[in-house]
Image 1 (tube, rainbow, N blue to C red):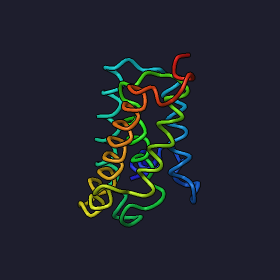
Image 2: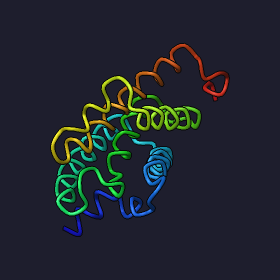
Image 3: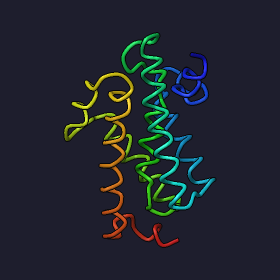
Length: 153
């Protein structure tokens, strides 16, 4: 069970308490920037995070309860989905982080409804959808050059 706690809390980030989800998303964005994974590795990372999140989220739910604040692997997955195939530029990462947190916190467009799914699926699905929405908006911002001249650096 200890392994699932470590995975679900993303190496303990979830134990921060209030703001743990934001900290997890920031750390994920920073890691993404530092690693600058290729498109293939981006997909591998996302699939692994979602899979581990569903499994570990289900396991720790029996101890911590439904979607406990200590579970932040879902923020990692959602943040990585936000940054899928957008390029690794600081303005994209920062914009993606803001967009993801907005979608994750306010949960518009049916995101909240996914929380009722059982076990780790309910933990992960809302953040996956928030990441998808954030990615679409970020892609549109980039396509229409709405991030200004910073996106050309």
